[in-house]
Amino acid sequence: MPRPLRVGFAGANVARGWARDAHFPALGTLPGLLVEAVSARTQDSARAAAQAFGAARAYDDSLVLARDPDIDILAVTVKVPEHRQIVLAALDAGKHVYCEWPLARDIDEAEELAAAARRAGTHVAIGLQGANATAVRQAAKLVQDGAIGNPLTLCVTSSTAGWGTQAPPHYAYLQDRRNGATLATIAGGHTLAMVEAVVGSFADVSSRNSILRRKVAITGTDEVVERTCPDHMIIHGVHETGCVSNVEIIGGDHAPLRFELRGTLGKLEIRGSHPGGYQCGALEVVTRTSASNTDPAPANGLTGPALNVGELWRRFEHDIRTNERTVPDFEQAVRLTQLLDTIERSSSEGRTLMPWPSSHSTN
Image (cartoon, rainbow, N blue to C red; front, side, top):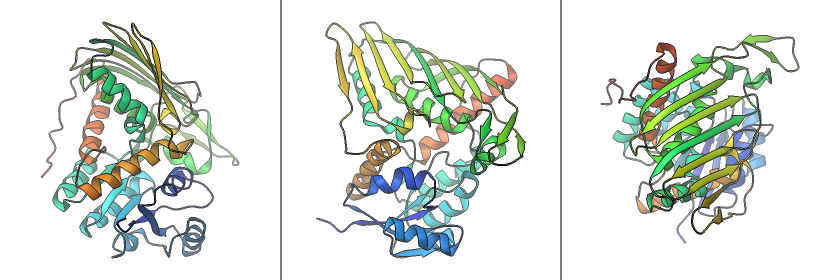
């Protein structure tokens, strides 16, 4: 067996966080990946994380971690405004990079990071684990193989408990659109990535983004912050395949995922439910054709947030070892950021728009 690929984690926290809940349990099931080092905001926090997650080294500076010569892959799980500097440092040091979605605060940063990845020539993955989930890839293949005939209409309702009337202190920054981590980019981005994975790219979109709750109470404090990002989205679109879709993204609610695709020969559904959003839990594909069947996603021994993240890590390791490129990457992150920008413009301008590639330079 080849030696394990050594992973460094920028943003390890023993008390909370996506790395603790999803990444570390996932890597524990993959013998080809080894947690080698971690970073946190203080040396004490980093040491605690290293001890808890079995890392050999701890840093209080993620840029130093990014340049560690004993690291093969850098996982970037810090807040979105901090992604750019850390990712650039890792790519400059010749590392493979797994960066959480959203990749960047805006299209300029996303394109800069995608261009840096192309120059580096290393492997990169963007954390769109929902669109990469076994069930979603299975649904896409069923559609591609003609299991339901030609796709006609798709109805999606995707909710998350976040962006409701209150938020904990560490999520206060999610209410400010300038930080790039919003309902639109997180819940919306994950959902739209799944939609495009199954029925193809949007050819045009007409949307309405709304702020239904402008005041957000910060739990455990007397603080109330102003929400400047949408907490509700409706996107009507036509896809290059000819399929017509209606996608609703709802903040402050926890309801099962609704993904219903109707074709000329039958129907297909993707089912799931998790308070953090569909991408955080198990998914199931159900088809209704002349021979109805239910196809559960294969189990990898993981549950909850680690389930789909583990599948993305498994495929990312395979890509690095074989030099294939199959996982969602920074180019897909740019495409998705462009789509979200088009949706925002459509809402503000009140008209249907085509998600043309950005005019920004990608050199």
